[in-house]
Length: 473
Image (tube, rainbow, N blue to C red; front, side, top):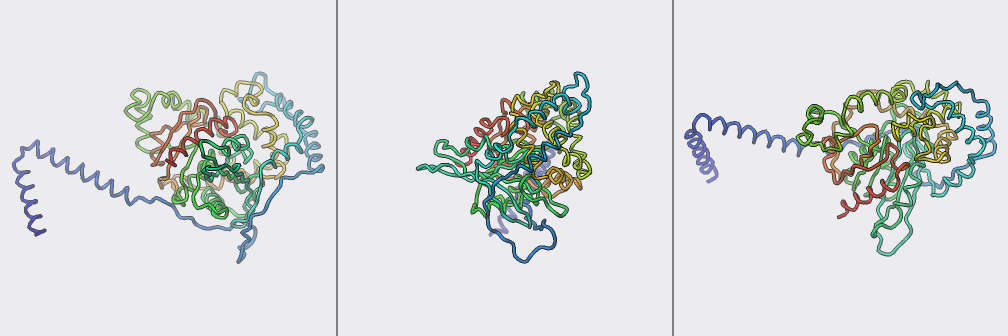
C-alpha cells in the first residue's frame, strides 16, 4: 500500500512539473533547493553540539594525591602591624617621575595625582578597618583540583513564602570579589518574594585563592572548578552572572553543564565574527534596521574603526604584555605598592569612562571612594597575587581563542545581557544571538562602564532581578 502511494505521488509530481512552462519550472526547482537547504540547516542545528566536555586537571604543586580533602572551611581576612609597617616603608621609599603638563590620564596614571592618592593611602587609609569591612560577609575556602579556592557565601534573611535562588557572581581583572560588596545587600533582600543566595569566588591566582602551580589554567579550568564548588555547596541548579573574565568563565560553565545553569546574566560580551557582523558594519551606519541594529546600537558602534579599533588599541597595551610575558612585567608591580596602585587604579579611571583620560585626577572619585579603590589594591598587594592574575591572560591566549572548543559551541541556556554605555566594546543583540541562542532580555543600560557592580550596583541588581523573574515565569 505504501509503495503504491509513493508511486502515485511521484507520478503526480512528474506530471504537474511537466505541465509548467520554463519559468515556472525554474521557480519550482529554486523553491525545492531552498526548501532542501532550510531542512538541511534545521537538521544541522538539531545535531549541533550543545555542551562541551568538563575535562579534568590538577593545579597544585607536585603529583596529584589519591584523595583530596573536600571539606569547606571558614576563613577570615587578617592583617598585622608588620604587614602595614612594611607597606608604609615601601611607600615612603617610592620614586616618582615628573608628570607632563596637562597630560591628564592619556599617558596613564599621572604622577601629580598619584602622589595625592598615595599620601591618602599612607596617612589616612586604615587597612585594619577595611579588613573588618571585608569580614562583614562570611568567607570560606575549599580544596579543588589542588587549589584552595576562596569564596564568600551570603544567604538572605529568612522570610515566610520567600523563594531563594542560588546565584554565583564572578569578577574579572583587575577586580576582585570586593567589587560585589555594594550589590550583595540588593540581591539578598526580598524582591516580590524572590531573593538570592550569593556565592562570590576568587578566580584561582586572584586574591585569597591559591595560584595554579602548573601551566594551562584557563577559563575552561576555572569554569570546571567553579562548577565543582557549586556542587560541593549542594546546588544542582543555579544562576550565573559575570563581566570581564567572569563573563567568559560563566559562559563556559553554561556550556559545560547547561542542565545546571538556570540562567546566565552578563554585563560584558564579545561577538565580532561572521557574515552577519560584516554586513552590519557595511550597511549598519546607513540602513541599520536591515541588519538588526537600532539607533542606540548605531550611536555606540560607529564610527566603528574609531570606537572599536583605535580606542581598543589605545587601551589594550596591558593586554598584550600580560598575554605574552606576564612574569616580566609583574616583577615591578609585585614589589612596589605605588606601582601596583597606579597599574590597577588607572583601569578604574579609563574603563569607567574613556573621557576620564582628559582629567588630571582621572575622574576616579566620580564613581568610587579612595577607600574602595585602595581596598581592591590591598587584596592584590597583601596576597602577592598580581603576577598570577596577569598570567590568566597568557593561559587563555597561548593559541588562537577562536579555535577553542568553547568558541565553536553555542550557548543555549536562558541569557540576559546588560549593555552599559561606557563598556569598552559594544555588542548589539543581533550579534550576541550568533553565540547566545536563548536571549531572554537585552537591556541598554542608561549609564555605567566596565565595572558594573562596583559603579552602578542598583542598576545591575535591577537588571539581574528582572531577567531572573522572566526565566522563573
